[in-house]
Length: 300
Image (cartoon, rainbow, N blue to C red; front, side, top):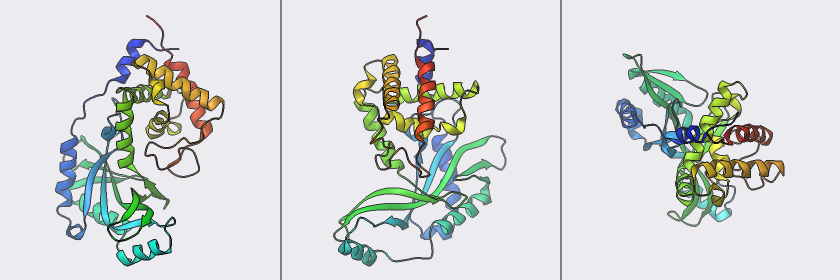
């Protein structure tokens, strides 16, 4: 089966981002009641497909991060002796970390909302409504991957978010870099990058409905990252050419096992590897083959 141009155009459309400000407001109101959080500096921001404008109809909940700024988790392996000394002189150990922050956030949300804990996020619902508050909440603390630390105020690092899955696995993400790079890529491809992502997400869902693909094998995040590695000129000048050009290029790379240098959209983490935020090459190749067979449109 192949798809018509009309289907591709429909799949490329972005549905409305409803209830985003309301959802964030519900969360902010709940956190104001947390006395223990009064002493914490934290920010709330959107991540995921809604933030990146790559969401499609029927997608999962809005993803909101509650990020505590200090204390932080750090990687100082790249620092020399002076840099490490500067770091330890500037920041001190504390007994309040991610686990304590997450428990305080959970306790506060439970006072006003129905809370369901997932493997990574917290799903929230209203007590007095059958309708879900469309949000998954991720309590996290700031993570810094240091490159240099000459003096306080002269620190160079990649800023990310740190949290643990329910099995204790430490996970580091870089959502702000992901968002920034996606915007740049979309502009560089004449605003075709994000519509192509939406097309492939809808195509993936179609294959899942046909039971020719398992949802667990094709997370939206990794599809976005795959397309981020496609050279800008392969997107051409039209939606239909962009879909075919991007998928054909990816298929060629996998056929020749030429995916050295593939990175996540954040530009920090390699796309393929054993880490919790990395993907399997064989799984990605199988998915690209199936998407290629589906997304080669036919004339009608």
